Length: 271
Image 1 (cartoon, helix red, strand yellow):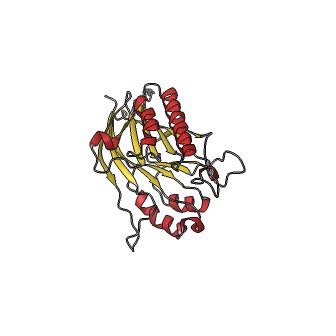
Image 2: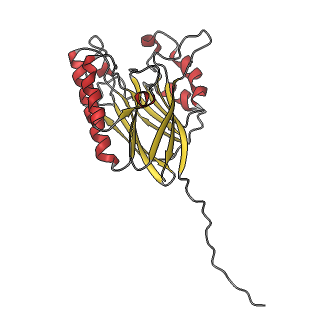
Image 3: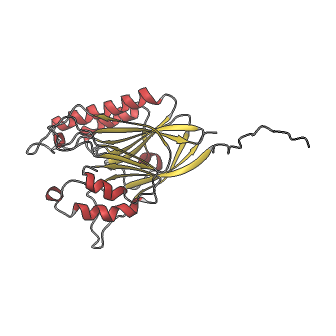
């Protein structure tokens, strides 16, 4: 009997060239109950199951470790990145940023903004936290895109406006410098109001860098919201549809945060 040993060839599935996912931005108002004036841990319990349906979730004000664990305990998102670093030990909180993804995260990094205004008794208290942005690179079939989750300066004083402008410059410069030919999504709480003349300059920073607000692209019914999803085109084509505000309330019809979550469906193609 003649026995032949044949080489083994791995059979691999070709990578997809198109697909879609739902992206959600949500400032969960995760400050202590003494500040929020409500049952913050109880709200996290109610928010957690609502996150399940979205493939990509960008969280802001996810400050507290215990509340964070409540949010993600049963999350079906294989990839989770939390950016909790502080500027220094004088800050009460870190950045409060987190990303949950059912899509593969290839790399992640957090960057803290250098400018802020306001403490416990001044401004909007932004310097109590360590605001910044969270950069992740997602794998989409044969391609990659960059996503940046951010929470920018609040408040309406001159110092707040200056800090917010510096934040817009910092995140766009980072995005453009690192993305190369990749498409970019900036998502989060920008604290930029569409009807505030002082916010036009930082918004122009985004537009000049090639970003468009999905709300503007689709002619959404509520333009000017401070929670935004911005797109910059690249070699992976991203097509937005179905911009919406998620109606997330408790049993007494009270919103589960002081921010409404916004979501959008994004189709992608590498063809």
